[in-house]
Structure formats: C-alpha cells, structure tokens
Image (cartoon, rainbow, N blue to C red; front, side):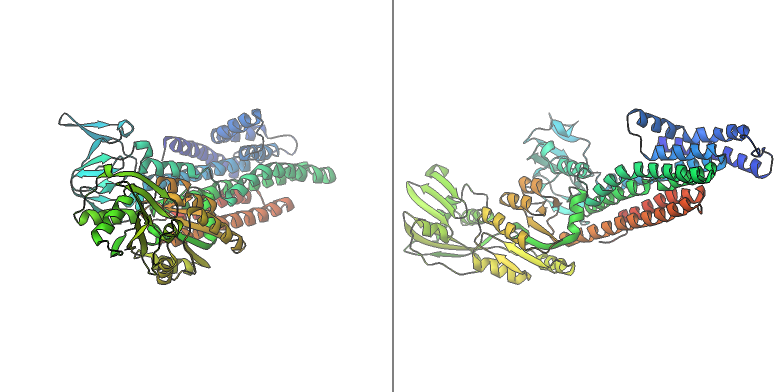
Length: 631
C-alpha cells in the first residue's frame, strides 16, 4: 500500500468504528428516535462526525470542481445523494453510502495501482547507469551522457544501457524483458546487443552504435508511456458516455424527486428515491474498469515481447481479416547465400563475382551483402578508388563506373532498360544479372532461407479466422511463388517496386470484408509507406529499421511472426473482458435504477449497484494480467 492508501484506510477504520457504535446505540434504543414533528438534530450531529471524517475529500473535490465549472461528476452525485439522505433523516444510510463508497474507491485505487505495478515490473528495463572506462578505472555515468561510439563496460548481472556491438567478451544475455523469450542468447565479439537486456555471466565491452535517446530501451518505454493516449473505440465511448450520462442522471433524479412530490405531496419519500437513484447511477465501474482492461492488455502483450502503441490498435487486432507480408526479413531470414555463379561470353567466375561485388559496394541490401561476402571469402579484395560512380536504380539494381567501364548489376528490368542481350532465368532464387560496357557477363543466383516458424505462423493466422494471407515482394515471380507455395499463402504479388506495394495494399483494402481489418507485416525502411497505409502495421523489432518501427502500430521485438496470432488472442480476450464489464455494469445499474425509481430498492442496494459492481468489474479486468494465463 502507498502512504495515501494507508491514510485512507485509517480514515475508513476510524469512521467505521464510530459509525458502528452509533448503529449499536440506535438499535438498542439509546439514541433518541426521530420526533413525530420536527427534526432529530441530535442524531444529525452524532452521525455527522463519521460522515465528515469519511467524506471531507469528496466534499472538497466536489466544491473545487463546481468552482471550476465542472459540476457533474461522481463526487457531486455522492455528495447530493448523501446530503439528501441527511435531509430526510436517514442518517445511518447517508453515512453508510459514503463509507462504502470510500471503501470501494480504496479497493479500486489498490487494484489499479497493482495493475500499474505489474506493467512496471514487466517493463522494468530502464538502466540506471552506464559504465565508462577512464584511465583504467570504471566510472558510472548517466546513460544520457554516453557519446556515440563510446566503449561501455557491462558487468555480469547488469542491464545493457545502450545499443551497441560487442568489442570484447562472450556471455549469455537475458532478453526476456524485451522479447518474452525465456532462453538466454549467447553473444560474442562482433554481435549486436540491445539495451534493456541483462548480461548474465561475463563482462562485455560494447561500442555504442546509438545515443541513449535513440536506443531500443528508450523507444520501448516511450511507446508504452504514450500507448494510453491512443484510445480504443470502447474507451472513447465510455469517456463520451460519462460526459453526457452524469448530467442526464442528475436531472432525472431531480425529476423523480419533484414531479411525484407535487402530485402526492410525499416529499421525503421521493427525495429518498431520488437519492438512491443518484447513488446507483454513478458510472465509476465503467470509467475505471474499461481503460484498465485495455491498459492490462497492452501490458500483457509487452510481457510477450509485443509492443502495442495504443488501445485502438489492440482493439483492431481482434478483427484481422487480411494479413499482408513482406518477404525478405519477414517470412524469410534475410540471410542470402550464393548458390550458383554462371559466367558467359568468355568471362570467368572470379571476374563475374568481382564485378558484381564492386557494383554492390554501396548497398546494404541482404543480397548485396551476400555477394560482397562471397567475394571476400574467395580471397578477393576491393579498392574503392577504382569505383568512380555508384547509383542505385530503385526496383532495378545498380549502375556504376569501375575503372572507367560502365557496369550493371541487377534484375532483368535493368538489363532490358539498357538493351543488354541476355537469357532470363527462371529459378526459385534471386538472380543478379551482370553486364560490363554493354556486354553480358553472366548471372549469379542467390537464395534466401525461409524462417522455420513462418509456415506455423500462417497456419496459426488461419486458425484465428484470418481469411486471406498475401505476400508482396520485389522478387521475380518464380522466387515469390516458391516461397508462397511452401508457406500456404493465399496470394502472392511479385516484381513490385516500393510504391507498387502501397498501390497493391490500397487495392486489397478495397476488397477486404466489411468490418475486418488489414495488417501489413514488414521490417525494412522501404516498408514504411505500406505500414502507415494499412489498418494495422506490424514491424519486426529485432532486425527492423528504425523507420519501420516508428511507422508501425505494433512492434514484435524478437521477429517471431507467430506472435501476430498471439496478438489477436490477447486482443480478443481483452475485448471480451471489457464487453463483459460494460454489459454487467449497465444491466445491474439499469435494473437497480428502475427498482429505486419504483421504491423497491433502498440505499444499501444502491451501494452494491455502485461500489459492488465497480469492484467486480475491476477484479474481472485484472484477469487480463494473470501471469499464469497462456495466450
């Protein structure tokens, strides 16, 4: 419990004890009864003691809000209802309503605090310091003060404060707080490490590749903190509902009091009914439990290594009807290997590979990296002074000048563009055609490796009710169809430029089933426009570019695309809880409201309709955070 909660509990106990004594005195006849004529001022004075102790904060808050023009809220409802009870001489009921209301508020506060604490524990990845080696000594500094390219030292048991590359050392790294993976990952010299993970058993020396404000841990915390700002439709509905509902309830209570009173002349009876109506009408069960449900869903997803940027995206994930995948790095590992080198027109394999490697020098594309690495592995060298020009033609390949000779390396469209005579190859791999000074040198076949979990991910989506799975790729038709066939995808579109992917997604959006959503799953910087255009954008957080992660609505930290279906399950469970709370609260409240208006419900029942319903709704919402639940 917090200090504030302990103070509230003490106040409730003191007021409760005084109230209990007064109730005993009242029921044993030791307190004067209400006179036949006049008002029981002694009873009022005695019961005001526990009332003021328990209600002073409600009185203060209601008064302050009224002074600021914010009249209609739950504090106002409780104040009017209990004062009304005192006016009609129902002192014990007036105190009881406020006492149980405060008990309910305390319970709600504890429940919400525990749920926030659960989220905080899940996301407790913020590094307190970074170790910098200076003059042979380790000095602790604020992560914000560490410069780009600095060497930091991470001892066993410490959190990695900033993203970087291991310069020295070998250790096991616990990534559970980021990815949800329980098995530690081994890292060694040359491997990338991300902030927020915990170094387990050996000291690591890491060169920072980002500033702290650009690092993974900082961005994750920023995403989680800002998630509450993007509300789901259900949350927006409750906010709007409470805004109009409360004043309507106040005026309805006024009507219940005045109209029948003028007709029957029984003012006390109808004032009692109106006060009971006000108590049960308090909307706190919905106002607290619905946002808490979405907050819990986002927290549970974080625990699973899924970062959801708002309740609206969590809600939308429940209705995925079409899932569109990028190929490279999403369905495949993005690890390309050269499987064939086929020189022609008198050129050798070494000449063909060397020319292609020079052409790809300025590219960071996985295919380019595979060609460059193969050249270096074969003992080749690169002299960048020989390369005078190097231009990437989007969707085609590379145009460069090597030793004053014009070289081309790319797909069939690049060869056709320059009028190069060649034979187009049909194979499942990616084909890089190479030409020098207008003469065709041959082709290199590079094959990507399909992710082991990709097929299971696709079947998992279909099991969750996704009607259409689609792949978009810039690869040739043969390569794209081979991957799509292996994974059981419904549709595949190949030979697409980045702008073509946006066009294709827009076409798919027009043909999706009404009421369903379309998700795009990608990892690269060229996926950014498509991620932004789709209903929901999923980005791969481990290998994905910063731009893709920024543009996405949901980030999968360990690149396991099976977690898309897990996101759907979390979303549906969360929405189920939220809907249960809304229906339960409204049904119970409407029932008691009707009974109170007809005179069949007293304030004790009204207390259950308010406090009891709120507590039950919050307990139901807390089921989302259950650590034992498997999604």
